Length: 310
Image (cartoon, rainbow, N blue to C red; front, side, top):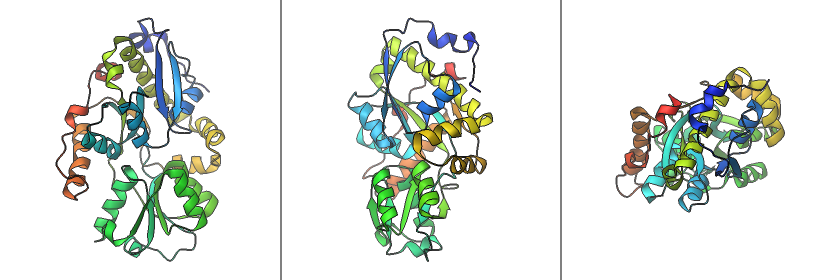
């Protein structure tokens, strides 16, 4: 059943005439675009130019070169954005399941614990959550990236490499990890629970924020996502069927992830705590030498959307 909102629910964000506005929105396959469509919230008073990019690094890169207005991704990619001085702002936080992120090993692998990764070929995606939680899992076991054969691969390339047996283990998130499990029999060595905060950040183009009409469209879009996330928690079988259609991941596998989630899905406004969590990620990369100097993430946050989300 599609979600419905009273006209007043979106009134504040849709008062201006937005018919001439086009938002360039990056999305992950099966996520925000599919979510809004399934929840019945995809018909907007402005146009949306959807662009599929399946890594937060790519979302930020698109915003930085003024090819996108809206994106999303992890605190990790956001920390790298601050380090590089990217032209991007973080405007909201969404919280999703962390059990769908993990370090996976081949079917029938003799790797039983993180210490067994020493000397092994381990895939990950640089500048993403997999980079961060793999580092923390290794450090906890007394290892570093120097102790493994770390292989940076885009998610789809990583799945291909894992399927061929070219990787002994793979740190990855979402549907690619689930395909590794369901299609290729991968075992879960560790999930990201306890290694990630659970915060994922909504990013926006500063030019769009400064434009009153695009700001209003962004505010409306955020509110739609907030309602859609709330809807998904009680209508997940409907959403899972749409995700399965769009990703080719079996619906039972998607429902299994939802049923084993570590928290409900939600979209919330920015906060001092969220900024502090982002700062902690940047500080870890400075401490470990990934960053050559401390990074202050606070200037990259914009709180002008907080009122509408409250």
